[in-house]
Length: 370
Image 1 (cartoon, helix red, strand yellow):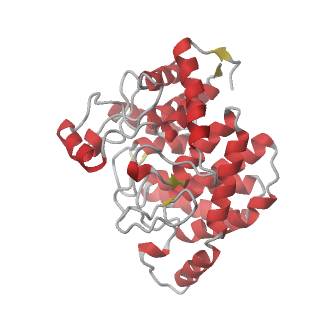
Image 2 (image 1 turned 30 degrees about the vertical axis):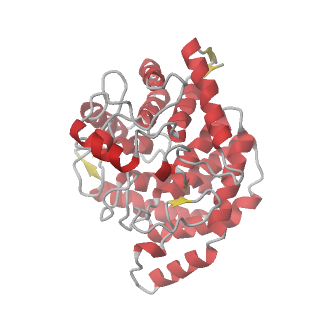
């Protein structure tokens, strides 16, 4: 992290609001709702929450991160029997239905949502949680003992399922193995193994197999690909560079992946599309992805570009300093598709806690403080 820089007035207000949005909307259980005012996002995703916890851990609210990680651990250990049954079925060579796997989102009390038809089988959140937990415990010298059983169960679950097709970050394409999902799993397994929280041998064997598959089928023209066998780049792949470190951040694959993203989905002012051809809410630009882009820029020394990404995120805030899921109606890829989503679920989810989290993380990377 750089030497602290005094935040400009606009950033100071957003910094204060962002930590308030995170801490004031956290449930008594420790769970973070994805968006408290958006009906279908009033649940807690391990993926979103793990990055929200990372922001809280960095931004003067480590107790908030503690509470979230305790909640995640209880969610996993409460399902120990379900995990073991799934693993037994896989060992027997069976192919369980999606409902046998752990869901991607839970009620704020840690229960399954019970909603049929949601795009619920996703693996990336569990890897992301392992990464976030290990990072937080190391940063604040927390006792790892309360988490060891949940980590063991999660590592066993991911070691057995990592190559299984599932939905991606965007809850699409459940018949594919996605690059960002593999990156999140790799990042989580590496983090807990390095921290001494998990079976190093199991983690290493899984990572070696995962890396071999990515080298064989997960790249195109030198860059990481959206899914195995794809030629396309995706904004979620930025997380494979930073923070997950799927490839060396200053190596040729990272450089090629960043270059491909800059050509296809990164906009000159700092905004980032999920992928070309996106139609969700018109296919706009995401503050979350600008945060990942800026985070990687900061890591490789492109400080001015990282600051541009931070400024772009801040420019998307409402007058009340709330950050949305997507930049409001700016250069949509499919503007005619916006209305159908608004009629289905309402207006753009605001505030999205994950957007505020990525803003705080990037500000911390750049040393921007109150």
